[in-house]
Length: 371
Image (cartoon, rainbow, N blue to C red; front, side, top):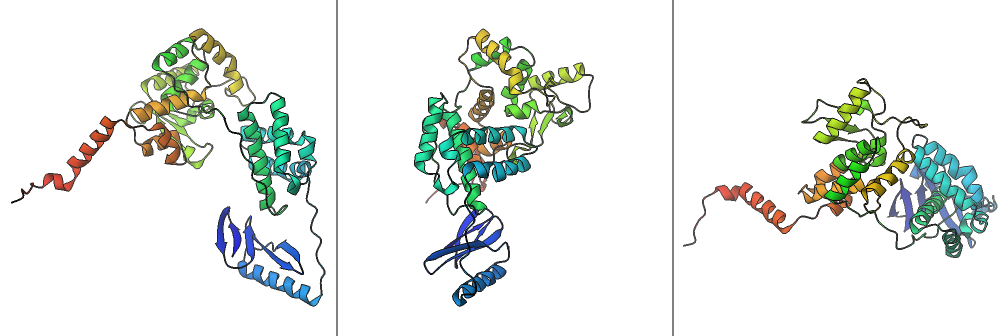
């Protein structure tokens, strides 16, 4: 049995060819040497023929062993292949591009790992890199994000045939989670202390569950004051295909957006939360100082803006919302993520079972007493 890779899904099939990145590779051992080459073909029959021809040629002595391409160092792979791929893949996602670029730069600045060939990157070298970043004062979360980038780099090197396998990159334990939920009092104090545009942004976040970047990029084309009871907001795209969704407005969100729309001259298009930034809309840096000032004035324990989304989803789950509906509202790719926010009480479970019992066909039929 050999391992085939088909579109990222690994399955076991008969034979000794494997498909990586849409084309088949073959590998076999001849005279004690491992032969592995790409057929550059997506047709398995052609790939088998090419493997058989290579075996035959070796057996007849018509060709010698082909020299393997030299394995690039991490620094070479980053500059020649990885960063061009990042630029092409995430051209429209500026924040993702910046995240990859920053992580790649940090990795390339650490000489012991940057100068190592991709197949020479060991657990010891990774541990040395982690110790180096910890000595620079980096926290666990930031280091894990850089390790995730290194893991992606090595996986792509395998997929593109630069190395045969990659080491397993383990994340550091003890990473803090954004599990905080604001109390009603904390949210009221914070919103009362927040200046504009933070007050409006925060109100939309805590009343809709939008991701902060989704709120920042909200456009008037996506706001509809006619649909539904109070109007709707469209999220056209996001981090996953499930991020595209329509979210009903609460009365407070409608009042905020309608006031901004009227003050802006009732535009048909454009950013809802405009700002003098390169993008034209508010960014995290735009609200950073206002957020810190609001936390200080409200005298509440510090939190990040993403906590407002987490607070909304937790309150929604506690209200009795089922996990499938919550996943749709949140834009989660799986209900497993949404399940963290749904914790039904015993009363809610009993009420659901009673409703189900009333709707059963047997409930309408006369009960037969045992003789």
